[in-house]
Image 1 (cartoon, helix red, strand yellow):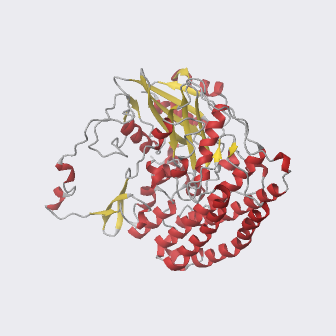
Image 2: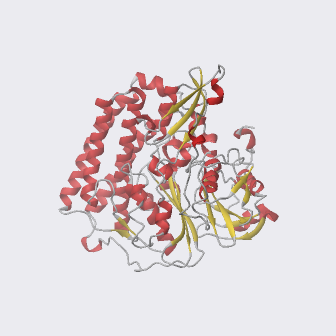
Image 3: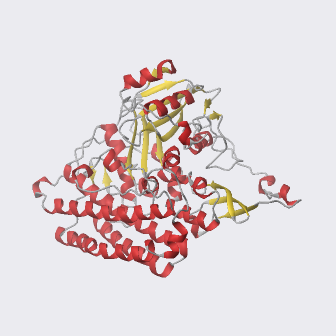
Length: 553
């Protein structure tokens, strides 16, 4: 059954309050477990699909943003964070407890396809099993791994022994006779895979009939590191390392937003303007590299387009270095604001930004002449890597991937934070649903980011000196109440970057879960590539603009 067939013609999107949702779910609800920004409903592990189908088809919750798994002393728990693409501020959490001696729950994959990878990660790291899951096996760790690293009884000293049979030829049984298909390894050490990504590809002649993303080569335990750090001082340096392609301030803002909401911290208006300006500079730098590497993937133009993109990215890096003192791992945001004011002399810093913005239109015209207007690139990208909007929504796609499929969804506008709702800018959306559309979205977003930066500079230039408060008063020690739970997100360069935090009354999080936009976006690759050719597969992967440090975390 197709996604279009499974969605009813009429959806009551007016079901928004906690009481209305509880009435809709009826006897499916066992208890309430409200989070700070979303009502939470506890349901039985064998009624997950009934609950989610009802919320999706009758209340319009069409975006499974994140799945969080965790273990308590007396139970396991899966949390499904649901939103609406039309209104991401309308949120609900579905909490599914399972006993410690039988951690089995119904899979959400028949309702939301993005649950496939999210539940595999929950099984891999926590140990929860999901009935009816189409492919429940490890995703970040090797299949031979013993135990689940986030479970309470995990033995870190247990040796991990890989039997020799695991190194056998996976196609050995197929070697006896001639087959109609061929197995091809792409990566994990290849420039076109944008990092250590292994694509297990099956070809029928020259066409792709199946592709599986083998991830986990760059898993660095970022969530566990954050769980060992204090809210106030020790977590903030780590977000820079998730999406390390110049998007550090965007990552920092994701943590700042969740922690500030958790601790009820207000950010001064002046600091919000600085944050907004810095974040958009990071977005431009990230998109420049995305566009340059995409052109390199599609028709191999290294000397011109790629180097032009790196040239303009370096200009942004110079500005960010002046602002933060670093070129990549910025560590500039602080809870309640930023670490220091704009560099002195301010006039020189503003002139540096304006010079870049003045040169940007001509540079973008060059990109359109050499990339979007290039006949070779058009042949390779128009009508390839097609991702219909309903399929993109089911996979939880966000950012340029979703907006390239005609989905008008941007958290900067739809769930405002920072200073975005005070500025004049537009969300870039293309309805081609193909590789070419995703390229155009990123080029248009660079223009919109430039508009935002220019307005921020105008504001900062005229800001009264005695009102330049860069940070609010923040308690030295932050201890949210026990069992306080929250999920918040920002619009990263790749899409919705969210964080779930559960507090336990101490100065460190009991659970810290990162919702990586690249993780969900990468799931769409088979939908875009099956039935097409290997060059189209490479173009589709490049159009996703993934970074494996964020996929694997």
